[in-house]
Amino acid sequence: MSVAQPAKRPLGERLQSLPKFWIYSILLVLTTIPLFVTVSVPNEPQEPAIDLYASLMQLPEGGRVLIASDWTGSTRGESGGEFDAIIRILMRKKIKFAIYSTADPQAPLVARDSIARLNDERRKAGLAPYERFTDWVSVGYFPNSEGATNGIANDIRSVFGGRKDFPPGRPPTDIFQSPVLQGVRSVSDFPMLIVITASKTSNFTVERVYGKTPLAFAVTGVMGPETQVFYQSKQIVGFAGGLKGVYDLETMMEHGINNPGPDGKIVVPSSKYGQIPGFPGMPNKGKGTLYYPTLHVALALLILTVIIGNVGMFLSKRANQR
Amino acid sequence: MNYDFLRLTVGVLATVGLYSVLYRENKFYRFFEHIFLGLASGWTLVALWTESLKSNWWDKMVGTAAEGTNAAANGNWAYILLLPIGLMGYFVFSKKHNWMSRIPIGIILGLWSGQQIQVWWNTYGPQINASMKPIFPTTFSSFTVPATPEAGAVYPSQAITNFLFVLTVLSVLSYFLFSFDVKNRAIRNTSILGRYLLMIGFGAIFGSTVMMRFTLLIDRMYFIWIEWFQTWILRR
Image 1 (spheres, one colour):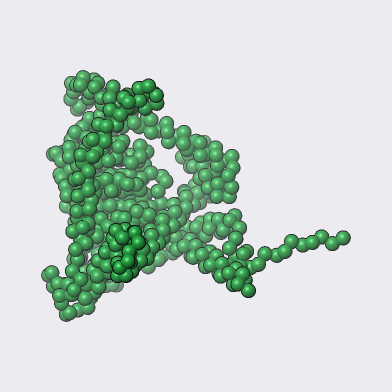
Image 2 (image 1 turned 45 degrees about the vertical axis):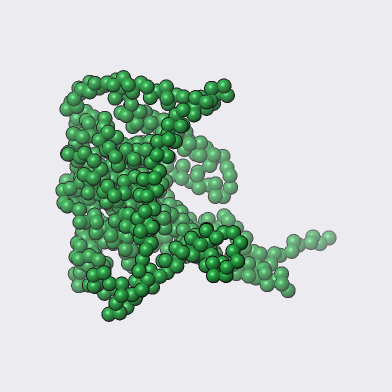
């Protein structure tokens, strides 16, 4: 007795229901292979990132900045790259920094671990490490981001008062004894507040601190469009958005702005600024340079699957019309 | 066993466990999800005390002894008054006394509301100001902005960009202002244009979101294949 074969589904229907397991498997393979090969993707840094880099480079050498580090392991791919790039620039310009967090209790630890890793990198390059308490200070975590940011904007000494950090070989010491915070009376005593965030803390910072000191942001890709509004209205001096922002910063760290290379070619031109140097020969390549080619491969797969799905839908519609 | 290797291996297992939900719901995923939630809650509880309550409240209330270069600080017992106000918040769970929870909530709401005028102006004032852009060019010496532009001049390319910006602002505003049935054809068409421009905006946001999610996946792959596999397994 013959068994009836199940009717084969039409092509259009099959194209619209590709097996999820295989799509994810292909995605995992495609996002893995490019990590093992070095591919250089051409880059033209965007204006907000150029402004961010220029603002950082125009800070007086040996000065100080305040940093809000509001990211954790969950956005390491983007925020981690931004944090590394910004801290590398500050360290190379010998700018002291105080770091606080208001978004997540884990954020201070993540920031401290990243600084320890960057210090290892400096040691390997034969440079003096950035010493905790002397060159940078960890202020810690503050719950209630909106309230804490308001306090920092209006009375930073009161909000930071009583906080202690760990100088090497000494007991926990009041952070206001640190050279980083010497003479700080208000948030305006910092020539810049840099917010590296994966959450709404950037909005709170604009709401509460705008007008008191220049603001610069490093945000995740999903926050890019809303941050563009703050940039457009000059509420922030510049920003790096997502992986593209990281790659932009790394490109400028390597080539500078309006800075001719050995072949006389300017890689990052800008009509807004004069010549701003980069840091050629130093470890500038981070997550941006590493991940950007891989992102292109992943996006190509996404576009391909969107096209396949649409072709499937078109074929199904045409079949139904017959 | 090397501690770093152990730490990274647990991280790899957790990453694989959490991503396994993409295939289907399973116990391996549930296990790591609960570990993650437990760790986050425990961490937050400890951090609330060590990073916030101790320095901002307890030390200020009881004072601190001199240590190293830190001078002794006198305590201020007035800080004890914050405790009952804070505890009142927990009466929200009591049917009989939940009115007490409204006192701290009222204080917080009052403080918050009082600040909103300044907050609103800080957020939107500069944005409204920046929306007033010149849409007519003042010079035709160059179509695009030259390397050394004339001070205060509006070049044709800038005027076009500004016009598109102003058009977008007005049409999107008209979409929200005239969401009811409008008879006037010009306003209706402007609202429709606003809707399409909003769609373009949402598309851009969606694109950024997709790129972000991919970046997070790429970082996890880097963690597994480079930081763990290449560094610890291949070199062993």
